[in-house]
Length: 254
Image (cartoon, rainbow, N blue to C red; front, top):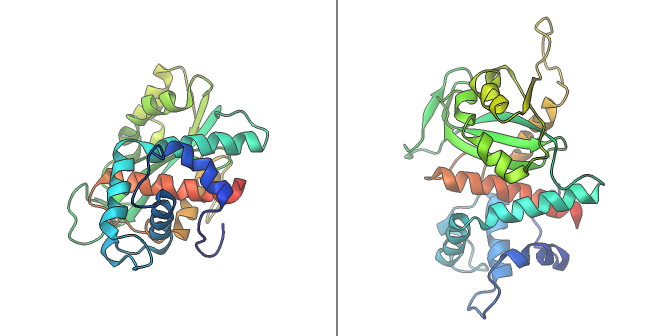
């Protein structure tokens, strides 16, 4: 992870440009648009305060919204995850994944999908992250923070199977997923393994497998746009999470 934002290199642009509509000449350079979006992600700038050296903020937001709606960010994220796994000698798709949640505060004056996580005392939203055993983000979901982890993650099972395919065998999670979520996995012949620290221990204890997803959650602190949820729609919140993973993978493989 670099300490400051850097524009896309030629090799990084070549890795993601096949997923973008480059088939005709445009008024704005799409590479500059992508750089603007990644700069927003890293710095946490508001859309309307985008500096003048970047394209007009309405233009940048237009492309962000368009690529969000047609699934472009998700496709890029999936392709880069596969590329990075092959780079380290692994199969393109994981056979085991880890799931965990993160409760984050929601910006003021936003009431959609807001709730209070009583355990963590956070008034905002909850992120559900599914990562492979090396921390790459494969699937994310966002909902109000007052919803329980396990029941809220049930809908992610079918999406995960569609995304990863038949190679998936096991899902790791904590006690909160050892209920309806584990039962839903069993319906698809998937194993659920509870990864929790021993009850007799005190303080922070790294738990095998589960620390990987917790590290991925920690990586979000490098991106000011997502240290807090500023989005009116949960679809935008999910896209910023995918973009954070995209930027991490790009810096890692190229």
